Amino acid sequence: MADNPTADMQAAAPAKRKGVKRRAFLIGGVAVVGAGLFGISIADSNAAKSAKARLESDGGHSFATWLKIGEDDSITIYSPHTDIGQGSNTGLAQMLAEELDAAWDQVRVVSAPAEPAFANVGLGRAFLADMTGQPAIINGIPQSFLSFIARQMNLQMTGGSTALRFTGRVTFQNVGAATRLALIETAATRLDVPADELTTQDSHVIHAKSGRALRYGELAAEAATLSLDNAPKLKDPSQYRIMRQSMQRLDIPAKVDGSAQYGMDFSVPDMRVATIMAAPVRGGKLTSVDTAPALAVKGVEKVIKLDDAVAVVAKGYWPAISGLRALTPQFSDGGNGGISTASIFKAQDDLIAKGEADSTAGDGDVQAGLGAKPIEATYQVPFCPDRPF
Amino acid sequence: MAIQTSINGKPVALAAEPDTPLLWVIREELGLTGTKFGCGIAACGACTVHVNGEPTRSCSLPVSEVAGKSITTIEGLKSADGTLHAVQQAWISAQVPQCGYCQSGQIMAAVALIEKTGSPSDAQIDEAMTNICRCGTYPRIRKAIHAATGQAAKATKPAEGGA
Image (cartoon, rainbow over all chains, first blue to last red; front, top):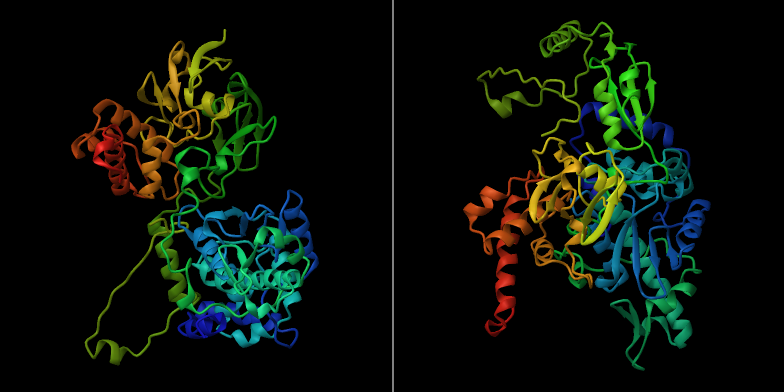
């Protein structure tokens, strides 16, 4: 049962914090709209068709949104997650390539386009199940509805170790396995042999009896027209060749020759660069700014006054930042200039004293855990967005 | 008033304002985005390039100062046939980068160090490699520099056999 993601989720379900559970209940309550078991997120849909059309426009044959096989045997995997060096895209590729029996040296990963056709339905399903701790409810939601929600939310997110646990196990392994079955089915017809006489290895379908083999690349066009198995059988871990190996990360070569693209490297023709200075205090407004010093900088085209910020638009980064530095904008403090860590702690204490604060932890069994001896301690964390380290 | 210089072996005439830092000319005028913008005050080293072979923080060097000089960026390290520099190969073998943002600068600093010292000691690495890596890849950087110099030494003495 190791390959059944639902079993994992059930195991992980207990020990939810109160706050999370309450939110999850609301989502669960709204979401229960149908019955019937659903398979894995590789069903046909308008979104999947749109993804397929887009991926195939530059050659190759698309399978279940996330995979493209080229006639040259290239394997392209579209990851809906951001990997900035954690290695998750390499891991996702290993999971799909393993079940596909792909030749690892032909595999590459690219970022899935940020558009609705690539909404991460499998993640949405797994996330709901994990959050509610009630996979049975989620399993009752029709796939089409989950897909609809995922697209409505433009669901493509990275966090909570969900890439491998959810997208990898719920979607990518199944896409790999189902595609492998489609390739076998195509080869069986072409070689005129029973499918169960065929095996797969290194991007080939092999008929050992007759010593014949077909490349995935020469089967892909036809296999891509078949509808994929919604619940393919996954490999037993004892058969793994690619998973459970420490592979060289696929993103590293581009990071040693300068070709890796970061956000700041993105460019379009005639692009302009803007720099911005926001009110230093939250809630503050821009009260005045003399735009002339920025406009005097060669290359600056425009100074834009916003409600709570001022921006300088220029032909490049250097004039844009030089122009911004030349400005002396005046901002109000929105009444928040006196806020400090101490005043935030005091406001929290006041709310707790009035009973208006949310509690996200219970007492537990104090007697069993700590015995009779009282321990008192107060822990406070200062305001700190996204808790860097 | 174009500034004449050479980038990765090719002569270029730069149109940028003379006070523009070399970094922005490399990234925006020449479109070579492998050289990164980090701190903008020559502290972090993400923008390191070679100017006449010297590792130089391009974010703080006005382009007027490179007139007539020879500049090498991360894109210029490969040989003409596309083969990676031994340091780049060592970076892959040791799986050095995590996010990778600082690594162009790290590699340029390491190449300059190796060209100067041949086979740098740990103390020389500590002294020369002042580039900052927020992911903390320093142990792998050190390992890769040692590996790269070992590889270079072997290449000149084929009788000792390959790795």
